[in-house]
Image (cartoon, rainbow, N blue to C red; front, top):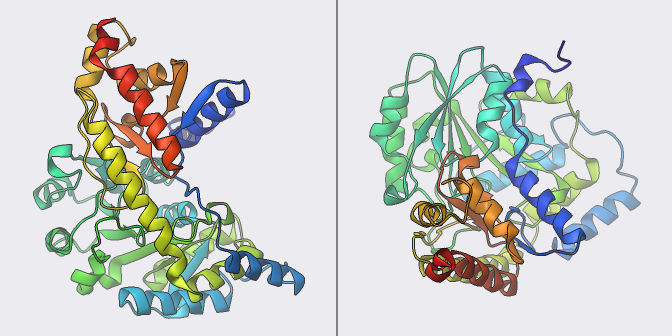
Length: 405
């Protein structure tokens, strides 16, 4: 008799964390590995944010807080949404969680009934489908291609909707592709969703501040404010302020749903870490210029990565417009490596294993983990020196002479 529930039997470990762990293990064993898998800025948390955490500790603010977040952090989030996004929320419409991941999990548990469908544009962030399944929902994938910029078209969305559709995620800028929806593209999706009032929209704005093309951030509520009553706007401090380990995510949405999500959280983690909440409050209310140097560095790195990957035969890569990921389509190169007997199967996983087996190795995440076989996710949240070495190593391993050797 299995000790594991049927629900969990279909859930896979996070592949991004698995790649990072494998790279770290090989490094510890002495192998020369450049890890390009982790979605984590390589910048330190700004000092004024750390100082706020230290001050909170020294004041003894280390006890339980309300399960949904401290009143002062909620007020800071309300002000942030108004100031930066033009969105009006009350404190009761805000929930603070242990990272953006818990926000999405809480939403699935609070919203989905058995058999409800969650529409997920692919490539997608790895945890969306598993979270839906843990809530007894059914993921419905909408595949996109590099030719369409890895962005879902309105006709594709319309075709995916059924009477069981209950939730859709829109993640822009995107993890894993670095693609960003324009205002016009979001408005067109909104036109479709307007006809289906049962569907709740999860607007995952975690990479809001990391825009690499000089554009102004826009989400679906900015262009379709009439969808406010069924949209959950999700964000966090992990990426913009390099606070991944602090584990603070937050959202604003319909009070009925926020109350239910808080109820879920009250029975799982209770409150997010008190000290981290005071640090997050400082991040949201303090000097925002700390974001600018990081974004400038990511822009330079993204341009370099795309240029370098596009120089490899059989590889196509869009220049990312947001986040810190490149998502090259390596299908042609994979087939050539397989035909030459260099990899065991014509798959992106086999390509990742091949790159990791090289004397000078690169750790990347297979696109199939994000619903896009034949691609790789390359995180450029690392130094330019590492990026240059990684691109050179990939080019060497995948060059025509290497394939023919």
